[in-house]
Length: 339
Image (cartoon, rainbow, N blue to C red; front, top):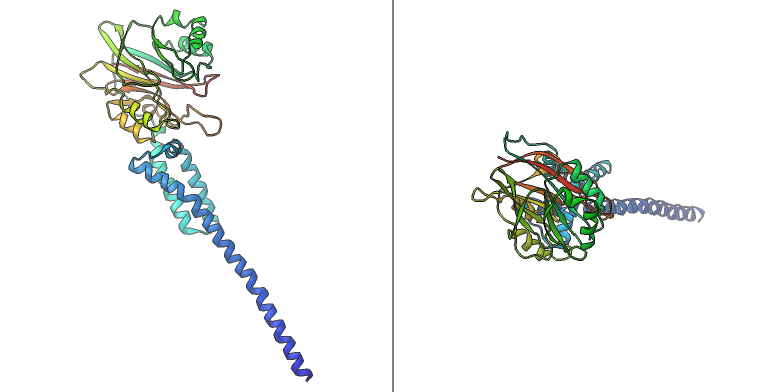
């Protein structure tokens, strides 16, 4: 009897030991699946974003905003790829690192300057500044006009009060010619020039005006400039598309054309890249400075949505992003050499 009881006790203990061994193994398996699932869930949005960038589809309001962050997506996928390698999730790591390489191939060329044509024409210095509903420091803008000997100034989000501040800071003594459409908060725009100008209608209707003008540089040389500010896609995606597509082409039938301002778009938006096919080059991209951010709302890293686009018949001698206190946009400056 004692032997039978002992055997029974040993059997129960064996079962308990086996159960104790199985439970931790099951928990470890569930934990591995959870980690794998989280990694895959993190990689999928970047895969979708990369696919949209490759096929040239901007999508809806949210994907338009996400595409502006494409360079940062390359950093994020690299981090995820290294993390997946460390956790031995080989397939996830491979996908993440392929995405990193793809994004790098798309964005890194912007960090390298292109060779510029040797031209002997006039130099035109252009400054574009979004004033954030007139809140930008007028003295700083006028200081940049003096420092860089600016010929043409493109102003967006320009209010009547902003014009008063710029006048007091001496802007119109430096640049006496202008076409101004001030408005409350974000709707005002204008062009201010060192040389005589004639207002034109080169763009379609826009809530932000997008004024344009022909500017006489002397010696029979004229250029045409547009102060660009299509609607922000976060507020009206359809207006953003329509107003950008209404911007003019640059071709040999017209004087040299320059588009300068807040495009609310970066090189990662197909809408902006299509605009470049109309006969323009991006001044920042030409000099390897197109990864420098120009706008942030304080919640996202800086993104380059302010541009100076020059007729492809020109050459770019200089480009700078200039900090502008009071505004959420930095100003952009370009020196353009005419043929």
